[in-house]
Length: 440
Image (cartoon, rainbow, N blue to C red; front, side, top):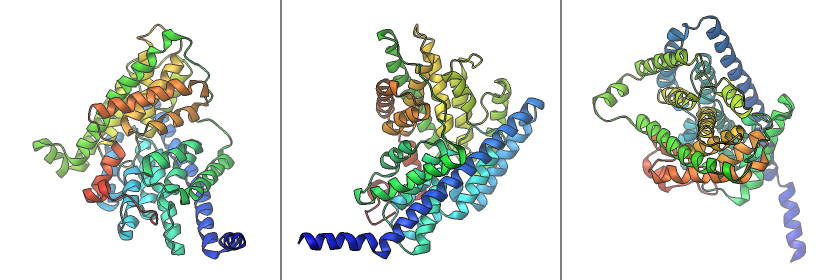
């Protein structure tokens, strides 16, 4: 019997179908990493170009932003209906469905290409969106296509693609894996875990090879100095949960349609609505000297480093800018903007408590708010710690994340990605039919 087990193990190691699966996950992980990095470069370049234009022509966004968002909404609505919004709901819905044709529609290469182009366009006209959520849909689309080419519906395929997209976008492989398990993989299977892990690892290696070893927000070292700083954990957690839950509720309400005549008017005129939101976004950017445009990376980094020049009202401004950008339905994610909103919230909380640990409060605000929006507390604290390499803040960041998650749930806020996934599938398919072990 032991010899039979050994022979079976050896046969599995050299079996052609096992190697085919390995090559799909390994090759897919590398490809997702390369595409995510190229996408990041294009998105960052478009955002920087827009800010240069704004510095020279401050009034130009009054025409450029509404026009760009209206055009993006028209293209997405007319030609690429699966490319709208973040992209994570589409990936979640693709895992939930048992119909391969529907899965191919949700995470098609055609939609992935449109997603990247239109997200770059949105950042190029000043929208407050990110490119990390779209990287999840792009990663899932690449993996789904590779699986189709070899004719093998492998377990964990879409899971690996989405996780690899997060890992490469932020250079955070651990957060990518946790995101796959907590947010996308409610039916995560142990037997596919090594495939998912290998894809995430290779995506991270692709990012390292192209960009070098870096921490997204740089290394931060500030910690809570003593008992007098610990109220910041409660403040950031509660405020983050309330604000994040409110954002989630508003996002879902707009996505499913507001009641009454206003909701009907928006539904019948999505392009005009996107243009109106773009105009309001441009006015807000003009009033804040451009602080609300783009992902919010520069402002978050400045707050973490304790630099002056970011308004104490940045939290509120970025909140509304992200909401205006997101409810249009144009391609673009909420990952980075949510972290920026949380950073502003943490900095504001630091003004309410006599403390010098402003950078630590910013971390707590990021975790509390992000957990309140997506209701994935483990992903929230892991990604914040991995993006700042501040492991000394592990315990308070974890607490703020859990508090933010709990408060968001207490006020009845939905988990935004899963709530939006219902739009792409019949309600029972998402709510009661998670992916089986033999599905992607």
